[in-house]
Length: 412
Ligand code: CTP
Image 1: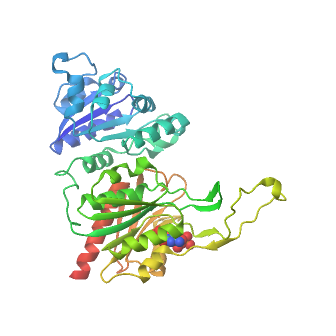
Image 2: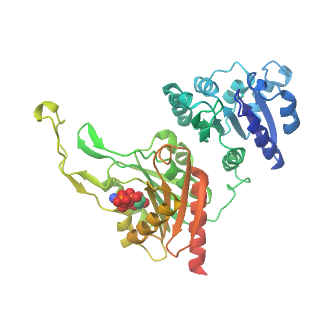
Image 3: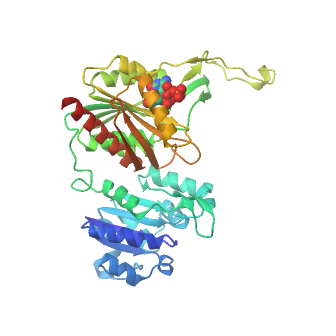
């Protein structure tokens, strides 16, 4: 495959040398486009040596071959690593005054960015907005990881490791590469829920949660790419998060809002499915009586009490209605001190819910929600377990591997 690696000016550029080498070793044709700033960290000679191709930063080289457009149009994949705050801002704005900017505008290939910057820059509203814009356009983002940064500080902003970027990149290459060629779910129908339900309080307010729907969207897309027909029930998931799933011909998306709507949609979808995966964060409680009028401060006495009633447990309902042979998978986001506590809580929840498989992940400061990466322990009711970490797509593929091996154990 033809892979373009854009490199912007950050110290993490030295790690990109390893990424380029790994891509070449994997048999890909790699063209590196550094920005001028990137060359202060790693020079042209190194990029040419590892990629085995000439390297230029200028739009004005090889004008006769229209090189500035050619690299973008030939690419099967474009990776930008490291992607600095400046480069992300320029991408969001569509600025094209260097070869990398032009290439990014000329390409229709998947784009994967690996941000790297100081935590303060990563958390700045401008960077957050730029990321939202890029994600909405379908750009894939890996990292940044949490850890030591240049200058002695520590926090989110470290570029993901080359092997993680490589795994995410291979997952994006068209069929024939990496995991995309697997067709082990062909002929199966699967139902997946994702996102977070909202329970209305009054016409303008609701009780909600922080689930972005990314993990469930990845689970649905992975299943479709492995051959399954997918019914995806999405509660409040951004269009950008669902973009790829919406484009896939084997994914049917139904949007819901409340736990009751999600319950009904999943019962319907599960009735015709071989596998059911409940990734959605379902509100455990709803407001007993939804106010038809906006609740006003002036009508109260300085406090407000909202009686709540418990929602149905969707997963438990699906387990109770399970078809013979159907595999039911739950997710559990837990605040746990370590893996042992996570495993114990997960095992108890798996038993309580009666599911076949439970993906338990730790949530809390910087973990889980809204992040691009995830780490789960996959606990099966027959006592086996597996761990998976990396991009949400990598976790999704590991989940389908666990489902496939559970089905094989049952048959065997
Ligand atoms: N779930 C569900 N219906 C609910 C709550 C949760 O179907 N009303 C599903 C989730 O989609 C997930 C699994 O159950 O697959 C575990 O969700 P979690 O919130 O961790 O479980 P709870 O039963 O709500 O347990 P806890 O008391 O720990 O919140």
